[in-house]
Length: 91
Image 1 (tube, helix red, strand yellow):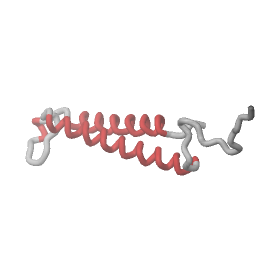
Image 2 (tube, helix red, strand yellow):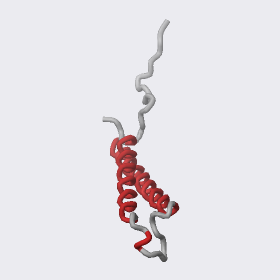
Image 3 (cartoon, helix red, strand yellow):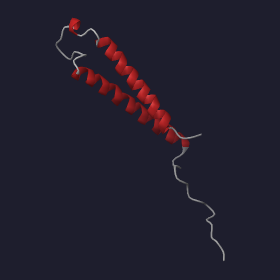
Image 4 (cartoon, helix red, strand yellow):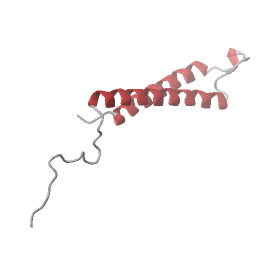
């Protein structure tokens, strides 16, 4: 009895047919999008929780507004780099 083995095996599970540079750029783009969306979502939560003023407001009514802006940027950066780290191709 003979067994047939293909001479060119198909890629295994977890393998991608796209070249490595394309996967790197795709991971960077998706990480950037995830970071921006998480940062904007955090900022909108601040508006909803009345920590951040929107249009016509007195700055003295929102003493933690600057800290919330910094928090939303940090959340966006961490989410962006975390998404890129997870999505990047293995070495």
